[in-house]
Image (cartoon, rainbow, N blue to C red; front, side, top):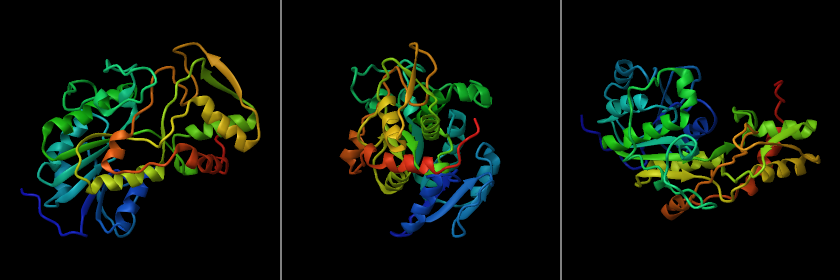
Amino acid sequence: MTVGVHSEGMQKSCVIGGSRYFGKLLVKRLLTAGHQVTVINRGSTRPPADVEHLVVDRDDEPALTAALGSRTFDVVVDQVCYTPVQAAIAARAFADRTRRYVMTSTIEVYDPATAALLSTPAGTPVPEETVDPAAWRVAMDLPWHDDAYLEAHYAEGKRQAEAVLAQEGLFAFTSVRSAHVLGGGAQEFTGRLAHYTERVTRGEEITVHAHALPTVFIHYEELADLLLWATTADFTGPLNACSDGPLDVRDLTTLVATQIGRTPVYRTVPAGGQASPFSFDRHYAMSNARAKDLGFAFSRTTEWLPGAVAEALTTEPSTA
């Protein structure tokens, strides 16, 4: 099959997932930009009425191939690829159906606790070449179908998924490695920002490392905008996506506490101990220099974080 040529202004885009948070917003952004959009998911959430909806399990290769039929796309944005097995299915299914493939990946690929990585000087934001998908080893025979295994090996699953899609060479491929995503109130389903607003409001302890290191964040709207930009760009390879201005856990908590008008209460945990979200005792900040060089302009974290905190404060508190 030969991928068809589509006229300018009629970009055909396929989103795998796209049922919540920044994926859902990306679908809306694509429509606004004039794309013809197809969404593939298992049917739990319907996309907007003017989006083609293919209800299929992306893990079921025969069903996926049958659902795609003769469709071709200019770009596929894969929001829910977590393993090399899923990546290999996608590579085969879309080999002759798209020119470009964008996979949403994660800052977690740089977690030095989960793999032997190229060392980065202390305090230096991590560049993309720290994890090179073109050279990363793939192990398809690991128990990737086991939910508990996958949860425990999330970072490696993402690294190997990137590697499969990069090494197959079947289409122009880029992986967008997202920083920690915040904003959107209840849409931020991980509840990590709510963890801070609730604890500061209640005067409860926030557990931190004694020497917590900074990390990076991105607003969910900014990430959707970057993914939209990536659909029509021509770069390949991994791309870090984070707003300017790393923050450590105390910076974040102080900003939250200032808005609430309370003083945060901290409890220090030993090195290697379990702490609150975004408290890291290992290097965990990315460089966004490549994306900037390619033409994407990022906001500063401190510009949008107060609004995200305000949204979290108006969200129904958890009962946890």
